[in-house]
Image 1 (tube, rainbow, N blue to C red):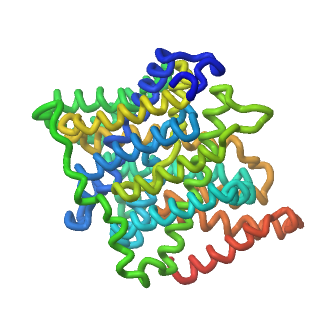
Image 2: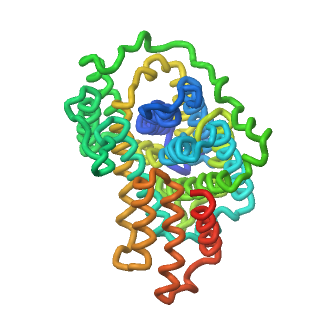
Image 3: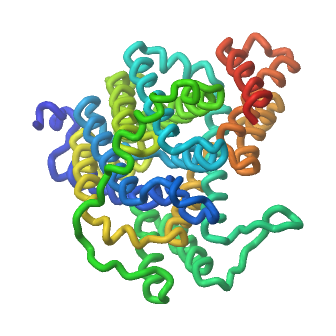
Length: 443
């Protein structure tokens, strides 16, 4: 075991790896509650219950996807990087694809499955890195920041801090309402914990908020802490149902859905792999060893997650917390994966968490995602315009896909008009045509 995970070469041991894996789990554990909340459209009033995903099944799928994905990454690539259903990608799945496009969640899972299969092929062929390199860095950062603003807006909306306003479209909600006050309390607590550098700040913030909610009668007390795992049957294998209706599955709308899943996951994984590997000291001459295996593990995790019944599984930058605690090898990721699987039996404890408790997590994670704005050169107008439209249009249109489309349409235009047409990669011109068609036929 020590030899396989290269303990001696990496200067690590079982104790450091176990502590690192536990630290990463605590930093990521919020996804066990937040992901089911988002995918079941918790907090969205008026949406038919029969069209929603089953909360218990999504909880189990989330835990298993995180467990399997992390173990695959640990064993195949031997990186101290853990995986789980990605923030932003789950919001796109729920709010754009299901709620916005009106696509059944079963078909949306099929889109995730197809994107995962394509990822496996691209990872094995080496094409994946080439496509990533074709898209300018500024637009990659803009996409991440835009998704951050979008999920922050979702958090504000779910907690009723921001509400519909007939005069101004949106406005400040009733801050004297119990659940809204609880969400505000949760934001303050989570921000304080983050500011103090607590590794598991988001998860601890949710726990403290939930306890406060129980004390004031806003959150129900759990009947028990440990119990039997919920059935995964409502979501398991649902991704295959849409193959019985191929015309709907391969419509222009679904093509955009699959492309967006592909695009966002592309940069999620690539950026996280590099960030965590640099902190762990795994980079050699600016090259990440076994990167192909890392991308393959990530791709397989997407496929398994889709079959189980959750949105795209991806590498988590929270893995840096485990690295900071001493993790250096894939053994830490295996530890994190096993803890996620064990967490399934704590469903009775976690199932009482309300949208007021999860909203602070969405808002604070959105803040972290928005930090990518600092990497954009705002002094260059040809870059600032597409980057700005990418960021701002996601929350304003309630659609991640529309934000990406706006930015990718304006980028070739501004570059051509400033005499820099030759600097635009041919792939970007191809995406320009695709997104123009998106606006004409699908919006």
